[in-house]
Image 1 (cartoon, helix red, strand yellow):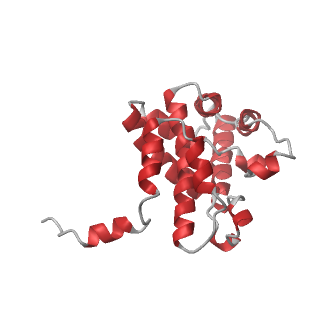
Image 2: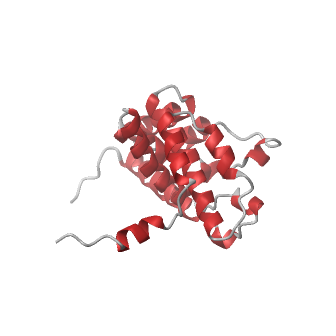
Length: 201
């Protein structure tokens, strides 16, 4: 007979959290339709979180921060949106939503204590924005929005000044420099560069 582990409840709570995280695949980023972008072309929160994490690693490396810690903050920064949705600057003018830390605490209520500590600590650090890693992560969040706006523009969609607003919100020098480079490029430039470069053997 197989013995049940003593932390069955913690394990089930952790498993439930991971199912909940998967719901971000189906949660659209709600700000883009305000700019006239069809819902069918709108990214999901999970898609946004993925590139935010990659950007965070790059910014942390450039700024001398810890890339791994920054990646963790980026990966988890919108986990709470399964509970409160993706709020836009417009909705936040009229609707008071729960603090991300409160929503995260509820999400973690049944999780393994070590999991709860790791996730809650990362969310707290991101929200407080006191560490260099948190500032890089928050800039990565804005920089991904800027990049997506440039991609939508290249596809013929208007983006209502999002590039300028996201650029103005950046706080690290590296993020500002990357943004300045991005606005001068075609988002598909990386493909053409690759195709015009002889393959190495």
